[in-house]
Amino acid sequence: MRDYEMKVVSGQLVLLHKTLTDQIKKDVLNSQLYAQLYASVKADKFSETIAWDARLTRARAELKWSAPFTLARRPQPADKANINATTLIMEQFAHAPHFDPSSMEEAIRSGLNALASSLNAQKVFFDSVLRVTKSDSSLKTAERSEVLMYVSVVNPEAHMIDVQVGFSVHQLLDEHLFDQWFAGKFVIGSMLLSVSEFELDTSAFSDMRGSVLAGLDGAEATLIVDLDLPPPLVGTLP
Image (cartoon, rainbow, N blue to C red):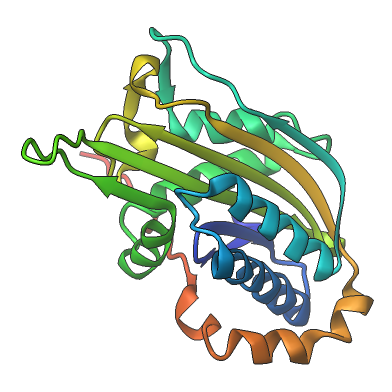
């Protein structure tokens, strides 16, 4: 955990290895935000999820991120399945060739837990990854939560393991999403699960850095925020 610093980039939790240079950290964060904003220009993240994700993938490629490994699935869980977002995320990371649980798992879980209490980061993140519709008997609408999020770990040489988790469920979810459980019978349609490994061509990206910053037009000031981890508990002897 101490090897990473954590950022929220709109709908993406990003863990940056502390040995990365400051410039590479900025390039990683700005390129990820730019890709998300590009995707949102012509597709709605929740009602047009497949189109939105395709635009995100295209933007990443244009921003000099290559993906030598991708594993995507669209499962429909059994009615009796007991499902939790944190478990889904960790299961996807386990499929990545360069995932190292001894150095990454605790950091990822700490970041997810911190999103329930780090107020500024929490608002930026959940405003982007969660859309909730409450039931309305007069309009005959059922309660529904739609989720689409990304969790990424970036290691030296700008190597990024990126997990995507998307689903809709007839249950009201909130900022405690990563502790909440729901039954498979409440899932609406198929889930969207993937893990990819990306590599940033830092030299090629440097040539387009100015254009990316101009395209962001200052959005990075509010949509890229630090994720503050709670202080460790200090035990005292009775």
